[in-house]
Length: 439
Image 1: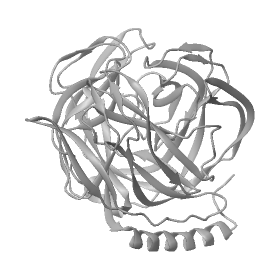
Image 2 (image 1 turned 90 degrees about the vertical axis):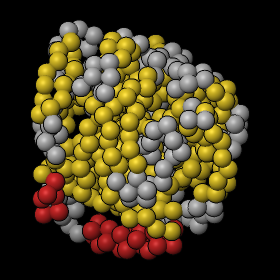
Image 3 (image 1 turned 90 degrees about the horizontal axis):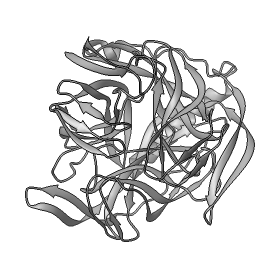
Image 4 (image 1 turned 180 degrees about the horizontal axis):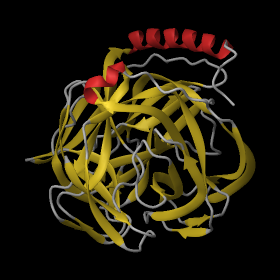
């Protein structure tokens, strides 16, 4: 498949270059461990709510054969890291990479200070191959490095921003590939306008220790998409229990979010750190109101959401998001762009492949003008939400982004508990081994 890549040739905001590339149907197998890298501001910068900025960070060198993604749950008092920017031309996952900037989305006005921790980057180690041979691939061997660094952690309380200098042990974790879904249900009425980035109070979610979260892609509300979730107060570690009280919502059109509306879903994954323990709580069905657009306009429908979890495959493939129209984009205004049809098979979840793939912005979500389909059903993607970082033009045939496709086995919570118990037993033995991959 031939597509056009659009990138900054020398410096962000400098000269635009376009080049044709040939993409082949490749996939990968993941190693069972993930490394953390700290995203630390390397400049002072004033930010304004809802206006994305490209922020300079202390450079991070990423090894070859890796993918990256931001660690969710807002890590800075003023906003979130939505994506990262590679030094120079975006490379392939097989190449070594240098990250020296991030796309930061402010949810409050204020000033980011040099040495502030603005986010955390997850580094996934993979081995690539053609699709017909993925199951024959062995996972790559990985040695997780232990790196202690200093940075300022920040949080807000009663409108005030607090900073504390801390030492951060940047290690990593083992992945279980076992997760559950948590629904994000509005607990207040909020009127939104296109382009607004707002905090929305949600029904509180308790996250067990040793869990990480990732928003479930495919927009779940007609008026916009959830970018991240928030725990109030001082940021906590992955190994701590957490309570999520708010979601960060990007509106793509004017409307009203009402108490009881479903605004999004998060994947909650169980992970192992130096001490392996975790518990899946019993969950009850929840009532919520799904809000979606169809030919009849915006439809609101009461539904019952059953508690479910899943086991994700360690083998995955990529799908490419290619613009199917020419469209002007303006800085900070989320834009719906039509893309060439991408089919999502049944029992598949998708995530964006991070590192910004287009010079003018990043894809924050995908959707269709229909009722949200269930994971077990699959569906077609014909549109994306594109967040521009500057004025420009998206051209037909340009690559806007890349998606990761993971097959999942769905099950009620009882079976998921059994999967987790077996994984905990395996991890307990692994941590007892003298060659646990840490140096």
